[in-house]
Image 1 (cartoon, each protein chain N blue to C red):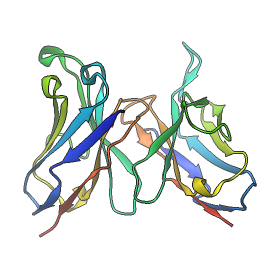
Image 2: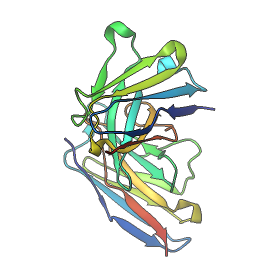
Image 3: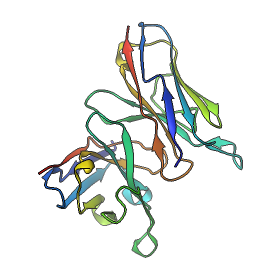
Image 4: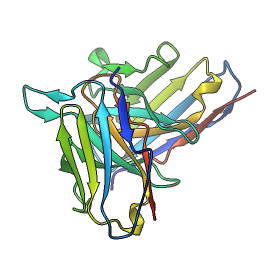
Length: 119
Length: 113
């Protein structure tokens, strides 16, 4: 079955960096756009970034304005893996980060990785 | 940005009764070239990630019970649960994918009365 498993979450100080990874299985990873979506504690959902299926030369990525210039989404189709490099983290980036398949409607979602930004 | 506004924020319904959740977008999410509404609905149970229920405003995902249905067009959409079951207790979100940034409604919490 389709499975997405996030890793790399944790506690980081403001201004710090963290890299999330998502291991995908059960489907042809290279055929699908992939997304990161976050949910602050007790709050709603915010699209963070998505990345196209294309090879390195023409890959398309989208970023929310709130993370543009600080976060980088990438993928390794050979490893069936999705990544989110998060730099210059802010307290307001504290959230559960979901790896998800697709970029319009999303299904399925991983269980999420908690990122806490606090001093 | 397209703002998605759901109503009500919370809803309590008796088991077996129907439930209706509304979603309004700040601009149309209907693509007139293909007559498709770029609107999805998700269910999020406590401690779980969201689960896709409906896309293209009214297409039910395989395996989703047929008591769930989506309707509407343009800027006004509805998720209807025809006969509430205990397992339907959750927060429900609408989401537009007509234009970036793709945006979600604030969520509607559905409880048992």
